[in-house]
Length: 455
Image 1 (cartoon, rainbow, N blue to C red):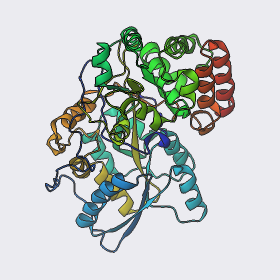
Image 2 (image 1 turned 45 degrees about the vertical axis):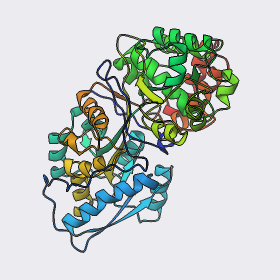
Image 3 (image 1 turned 30 degrees about the vertical axis):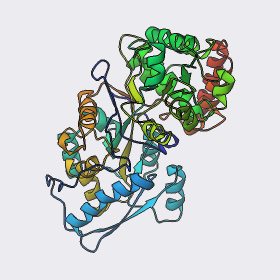
Image 4 (image 1 turned 135 degrees about the vertical axis):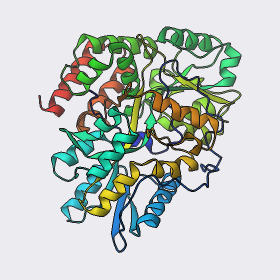
């Protein structure tokens, strides 16, 4: 059974097309993953595969963190819902703190009807408090038809289905500057050993190999999660995510020791460890791609959302900037995912109908055409995506089936897994500063985890 984990919204303030690949399944380039303005060609009418009720006269308020192009594209989905049902839908951005936003609305007695939540932990919190309402039979039927068991389980809590994963993301990618690779004679790495060897080759050529945005602690949790999942395996990953094993476990020691092979090595981090600790995530991408011909770094690790930062840095996706799956540390390469789950905060016919619509391929079709979106909906026709690379990426998402794990730190209580200058973020920043202190880092992680989990 898949353990529900959750995703940090701060990771996804600037996201682009997702690239999710199972080990060895996809040699990924992102050429043509969207037009320059973030819009796809699209334009064809979405299919009608799901029956929705007449909701004329009903009003809905929907909240999500999305702004800019993401908000614009999601609004297209809501407009189609209005067209089919007669309901009127208002979209209200929540800001990054979805739990705080909804909590304040609940306290005032005026919660939104539906929220798109980026954290499974927040979904579970809403369910525990009775804020989230279980989905109805129509939505259950759509989920059963269209989504793998793993995605259904991630939207569940204590045996009840509460959420619909509408938009998904991937956090197991290495983005690289093709000019730096060509100059060094480097190649894409399939294993951790190869990755370190290629990094050394690039360093020897005169370019800093790996840019790390260590000023943002969440990037370091992503490094750990990918290494740990590949090395310790999914079962251990689930246990650690629930704090059913301690952070002093030998498997954690092994993962930290592996990370230290990179973080503690001389000449492999752009700017060294101190430089990495002073580099925010967006700047870490800029180092690799702002000057495509003579970059300050050759590679940067992060999820699909880094594509937006690559474009902002002026590099051309698919030519100057390419990407490959996070290398296998153990037997298989890791697949760490994220996503936005829709939950009803009012148990009304209208809110339930919107969840049913979001669980259908009809809704996914609309945003897929616009670009910057990938769905885990198995029934979505991949021809809806604006180009072949996105279609391949989408097919890889579906092909992954249940062989993925959600972001570990996002499952944790926020005080441990999601807050600057404390918990896991702080402990891993301290470890980046001193990668020799493996056991001290473990003890610090365990103290903070025990306090946050209450055990």
